[in-house]
Structure formats: C-alpha cells, structure tokens
Amino acid sequence: GAVVSQHPSWVICKSGTSVKIECRSLDFQATTMFWYRQFPKQSLMLMATSNEGSKATYEQGVEKDKFLINHASLTLSTLTVTSAHPEDSSFYICSARRLAGGLGTGELFFGEGSRLTVL
Amino acid sequence: QKEVEQNSGPLSVPEGAIASLNCTYSDRGSQSFFWYRQYSGKSPELIMFIYSNGDKEDGRFTAQLNKASQYVSLLIRDSQPSDSATYLCAVWRPNTGNQFYFGTGTSLTVIP
Image (tube, rainbow over all chains, first blue to last red; front, side):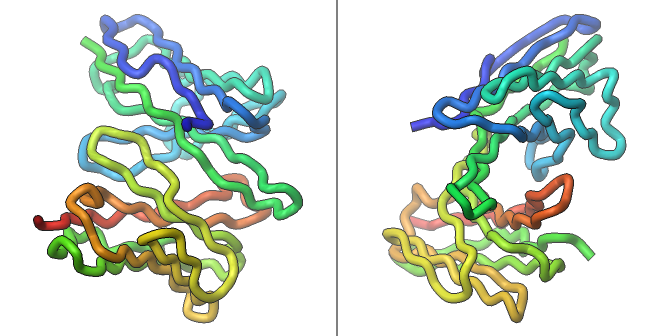
C-alpha cells in the first residue's frame, strides 16, 4: 500500500488564490521530503527539499515566496502555491525518504501527486 | 554532463520479449540506484533498488549494476502491455543537499 499520501489529488482554483497541498509519510518518519513539479510529457523537476524543523532548500529558479514549504513534523510537509496563476497549473508530486536501518540510503517513495489547474 | 542519463526512447518491444533499459551516471560517489515506473498522469512508483555490483532479481525484473562502468540497467522479462510506461532511473549520493538525481526517463511500449 501507499507509504506516502498526498492531498488533494485534484484542485481547481481561481487566479490569485492560494492552494495548499499536503504530503504525509504514513508509516515512517521523514526528516527530508522533496517537492517536484511535472508538466505534461516532461520529466520531473525538483522544486525544493523540505527539512523538518528548518527552512526548505529551493532549487535555482524556484521562487520561495511563491511556493511556501512547511515541514512542521516528521510526517507532514505542505506546499502552498500563493497567488496562483494559470502558468502554475501543473502536476505537483511530493516524495519522502524512508531510511533503511543503518544503511543510510533509504528508499524514496512518491505521493500520488496533486494536479493543479488555475483558471 | 548530466548527473543521470537515459535514452528517452521510445523503446518498443513485442509482448513476451525482454525489455532492456539503460542508465549511466556521472558521479562515482553515487551509492544507491533506483528504478521507478511512471504511468501517464500518475506519480512514479518504486520498482527496485540496488547498491551492490551485480544483478538483483525481483520477479520479472532484474536490476544490474556496474560501478566501474557507472552503468545500471533494468531488464523486464516476459514483457506485458501493462509494463508500457516511462521508466525513471535515480541515483543517490550521500553528502549532497539534493541527494537523489533522476534521469529524464525512457518510454517503453510493449506491443500486444
């Protein structure tokens, strides 16, 4: 079953509004979560790395004031798209790393994704 | 040079054949290697991971790793139409902020 849950799966909003997407690790604690964006027929684009209890690390070109990330607990990270515009319409996917005992590597699991449409 | 490179395809194989997907990576510090499958409109799902040189088998899937050549592959035996998807290769490097690096994916079509 799913080990990372993302909500909502679909969201439609008006231009200028803000949208919050939640990402939860279901049966493990995740100190690090990742947020990706994917446009149709394109590859995953890492937006930011979310670190529990500290500020997120954003990739070059990603506006931190527009894409607010909060990782307040070991099982929850949120992405808020502020003042959304039609060009923000995309498939947003979170992932969380489940550590594998003492190996230090861990597997990366993805949430189901959230499809945002801004009208 | 990209961190992780994959042939974008499309790769087409007949049903029942072996599909071979390849991936190369640039950094010798990479320690673990992952294969994900992504259906159109869905998020990636983990198929296998490997971190030791050699082969690792799981059902119809076999991952192969050659660290000397910086090469990792995924073989799918007895390919089924339901295997048609984009396959993403990912590598993990310790001590980097990003840590996971993804290829752009190879599109596989299994023809009935």
